[in-house]
Image 1 (cartoon, rainbow, N blue to C red):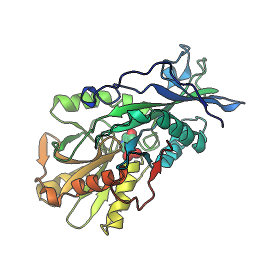
Image 2: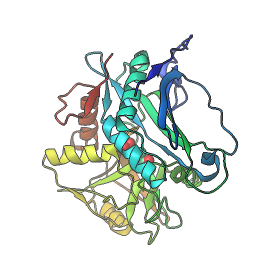
Image 3: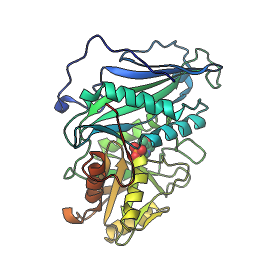
Length: 356
Ligand SMILES: *Cc1c(COP(=O)(O)O)cnc(C)c1O
């Protein structure tokens, strides 16, 4: 599909990264495509960033037909720009769409739109290591009608936000709390889809965790409140002496692209990674006995970050600090970022260059 390029008459002055919070600043242009049942996807364009007009009946506002993605464009060691595994995001968007009765977006349109947008906004990709240009694709239903049914109209949009590093080696480890009176999702729900509905309902719990001095939740399964699932909006890994364990993709877990990359990197290095269930009781007992060497989180924003403490039933279980040279989380962070910033050979073919 031919992408129309409409260049903004004026460009903003770029903010200093020190003034930027996650998503507080956006580049000058966005990519937009529209869908109408019968016509399919049409009018793909890169255009000046701006507001949408929305009928108050737009279905997304009432019943939450909305899915999103998140990935980053990285400044390469040679000055170029590359995206990390964008095909995985295009494919995952469509899995989320299928779950939410939304139309698939051709993967080529996702990739072409993203490439054209990032190429036009190349100057927005930060030069500092750890920082990146975060791309947020989103699709939502905008048919003006109030029946609970699939919308016949959708908008797909990609916006770009310069982001400072969310986590760097040496920052304080995360503190998580596991609770038996709440859950992120249940079996048969949509926990494996990146849909807006999964996030709004967690904010009260996030605020409660923060009031108690934690950074985020260690989500347990909704049925029995025993199984470890995710940490906030990241995937979670537990390192024992001789193996690494992460929850299996049960349908309740978001299949993180960083999760998949970390599993591949570890297996490539000969480290056994088991996708198996872990109970909270077993985990805290293993932390107290010193059997758990590290716990770490993975996600596009965080990359890989260590956990230092788990709160459960009025007790805080603290992990013994690991020496920097012995930290698997720090080693994974270094390996992954070296690939992302083009400082290491991309053995897995993960990076996609943006033609400038
Ligand atoms: C996006 C997300 C992740 C991480 O996925 P990545 O592809 O690694 O960024 C993990 N859990 C939840 C709930 C998420 O929304």
